[in-house]
Image (cartoon, rainbow, N blue to C red; front, side, top):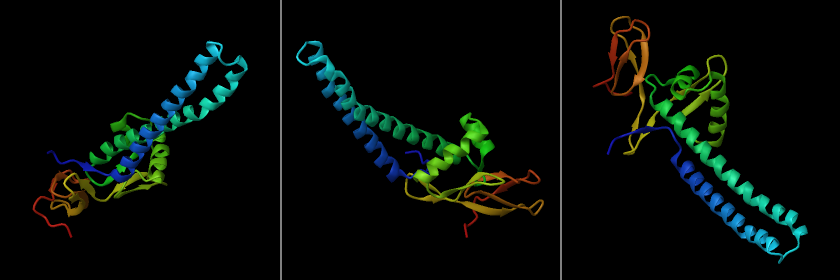
Amino acid sequence: MKQTRTYLNHDLITKNKKKASLQFKFGIGMLIFYSFDFWAIHDGELEKYYIPLVIALMMPAFYLIWCSRKNSSEIALAEKYDTAFCKDKNGYVTAFEMAQVLDKKYFDIFVELERLFRCGYFVNCTLQQGRNPCVIIYEAQMNDGQSVGFMQVICKKCGASNRIRANSRGKCEYCGSVISTVNLKNP
């Protein structure tokens, strides 16, 4: 099985998927139930003045279906942002990097991220707003239960400190030379 990184709160996502499924099923069930009233009105078993009442009784069903779609779209959005976080190499995911990966406008990203972070969809990362908005990543959970973090590495060529993912290679942010955390121990 391929190991994949993730920053998603899987407990919350599982709970919200079940919730969305139940909302959808109950909403559809209510719509089907009240649609029989429309048939009864059509067949003349009920008077036409019951139509507003039947429509009013259907409103909670429409609301449940809308809530189901909203929960499902939030989960899908969190999963898209997770892919952007997992592609990061230095532990700081800027809005510009996310805009490129997700093909979204720069200023829309942090509005969505703020809502998703407030709802608790992500773990082991934080949303930093202000002058240099970004998502700071700590450790990714692997599907085998291990975690993969970041390490500070000193460039041997220029002496600059760089932050890269453990057990990986990258380039120095300052001089461009190859740096590596392979065979180094994480403090």
